[in-house]
Length: 396
Image (cartoon, rainbow, N blue to C red):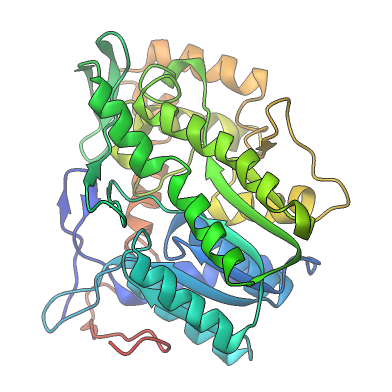
């Protein structure tokens, strides 16, 4: 089967197994080029197949020789149809981990459900005994509540008034004005139900109830703040309310872990090209300009560089540094005043005609297609490829 990228809006509906494997290999090589990290040895990653979750799993395994269990919801392959990129990423990760004698098993299903939580608990009991760290990196747009059966859907809307600003179609490079109508109270509550901290807390409570958390246990979830430029649609919009809830949940979880000397953290990460960020109006244009400026200043990072710096310089040192709100700030390079001042100036100059010279839209496109296994120079995309790739620990 010859696999080509096919897009629908901000997602790619095909994935290339060899390209995904190359992307994973590149991340593994980066971590292996660094010094070992004295980090957690038994790690559960919830949302482990793409983006920051995948980078966390790779950094734990190849940076700290950790045993990892990954939970995610991905589409397996079928004859004539590719799997989702997260499936291929995980297959490549597990193969590489097993080749180096590292424990790695995966569970595919709805992480919000009691069923998947129970399946994970039984696997931990059977194979690992206890967990030293849980990484919570879910990015689902919908959630069915496991107790009530109510299905919630998140929205990306401003609060209070219509938001109008520039955005870019990163496929065509066209910059146009977009207006987003304000949210309702239901939009806000739905988004908090999906993307807030309730499910994170439910996972930790269930693991603790089953005596699966080790002394000095850590858990971390990922958040984003961003600049004033994106505030109305992000941090002061519906998604921002969910992130506020997530960040407050860290304090609640920490209180529940006192008897273990445990700690819950939220890490505020930088803006990156992910499947989630591609869906947010304004963000692709902001990232295109940000990448140009950060590359010129030699401080650009991808997911794997971010997570390596988080682990080696923040999370696993004697005293984890946090801001006044108790958050780890690994977005510090993005939010440097000189970086933001330059991006703001470029934003005013950005047009369809100027973007190719003042921004890095080509870099954005490349990273977007890399997410799905495309646009790697080393891969022959004209070659026939077997789309049926199994994850070693899952009976596909």
